[in-house]
Every structure is written in C-alpha cells, then in structure tokens.
Length: 299
Image (cartoon, rainbow, N blue to C red; front, side, top):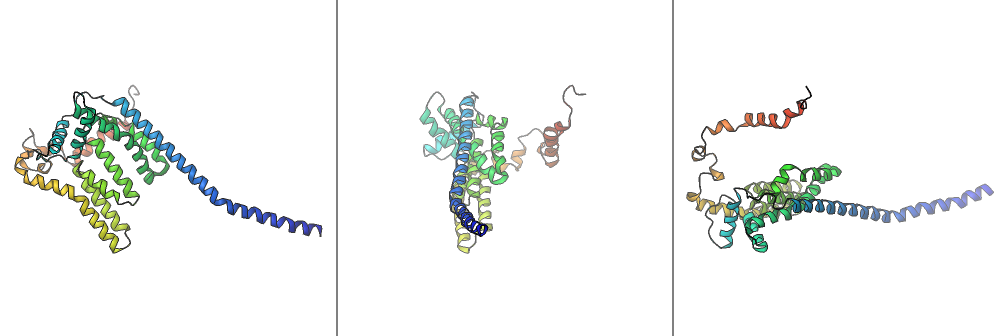
C-alpha cells in the first residue's frame, strides 16, 4: 500500500514537469530567436565596421583617376544640366551620383572626390550584402566568404577607382538579396542596375524566370510580367537615345564590338587575342599551373 500510494503521488509530479516543459517551450523558442537575432546584428556590425575601416584607410589612395572616370563625370554633368548626352555608350547613374556627391563635398576635384565617396559609402554595405546573400547559398560559412571577398586585392583596387564596378556590385548583390527573399523590390534594384551597367538586364530576366517558377497563380505571373516590363523601361529609353544618336557614336561603342570598324583599331587580327582556347590557356597559366609548381628554392 505504501509503495502504491507513493507511486500515485509521484505520477502527478511527473505530469506537472511535462506540462511545465510544454508551457515553457514558446519562451524557449523566443529566447532562441532573440539569440539568433543578436548574433546576426553582431555580424552586421562587425562587417560594417570592417568595411568602414577599409573605406577610411583607402580613401584617396589612388590620386590619379581611372581613364574612364571623365566619361562618367561628363555624362553626369550633361544630364544634370538637362543636355542631350554627347554619347550614350555608358549608362548614367554612376556619373550622376558622382557629380551630386561632388557638389556636397566640394574641393579641388569635386567629381573625383564624389566618386571616391560613393565607393566609400557602398563598400561597407557590400560586405554585409556578401554575407546576407552568401548565407542563402553556403550557410554559416558565408561570414568567412564575405571577409575573404572584401579583403580580396581586386576588391580593394576597385574601391580606389572612381568608376562603375563598386556601384555595380552593390546593386547586383541587393537585387539577389531581394530575389532570394521573394520580394518584388528585386525588380526595382534590377532596373537600377541597368542604369549602372547594361548587364543589369540579365537580372530582370533572372527575377522574371524565378517568378515564373515559384508563382502559384496566373494573376501572380501576370504581375511578374508587368514588373519586369516596368523594370526594363529605363534601359529601353536609354537604348532609344542610343539609336537616335547612333551616327555620333564612336567605333568603340559596345554594340559595335563585332563590326569591322572596331576590328580596324587593332594592329593585328582580333582573333589572335581572344577566343575560348586562348582564354582557357590563360586561365591555366595564371590560376591553376602555379598550384602545381614547387616553391622558389624548393628544387
């Protein structure tokens, strides 16, 4: 009797402990979610601080602008003065941003300083975006991927050049970030990317294809088609200007790259300097062959 009564008294206690675990599980989930949010915020702050340090350290590191810089800046001045551009070879967003930031900072070379400031602002954001986009693909290793990518010598070189590449990378990563989140903002940033470099048109197509795959209704697919069409409008307007100004465009315009006039600018046949075989050979010599070579003095 004593053993039975003892067992009967223990059973409710065990049941109460089980119920306590069930009632405390939502709190546990909230604590886990809060902890994960805090870790994410720490990573964002870490990458931002690292990127800002880079921006300060390398600001003005290149005293002479890239030879393409004046093309962007002149285009920005023409558009902000409501003039028809003398050339439509380059799309306008980078030049406009350089000139606007140059008006803010002033100095002896305001346009050049504005271009460097644009890179300095976007560089820390690129570090964060590399992590945000990367973790959708490679998971937790994305933090190391972002750090390695942001200290890459090529990345640091682009940081010091007041041209389009840093802005292009920022807009591409932002587009992919919203694309992976299934947000329609990806069309907005894809459209912005087309005004940084022509290659942004591929992002509009990618966002549209992804929507066609994941949309569950005909109405959603129609909406995706409308968004992609609207995102293409800025590029279509710019290409219209290109066609109207075609006679004034020089032989180096991107659309003339396969024309005879473009080929005539080189001393030898252009076929001798490009092609799949030649590019694969160069990739082997620069990227892979050194991995199999003994160290200097190693025999």
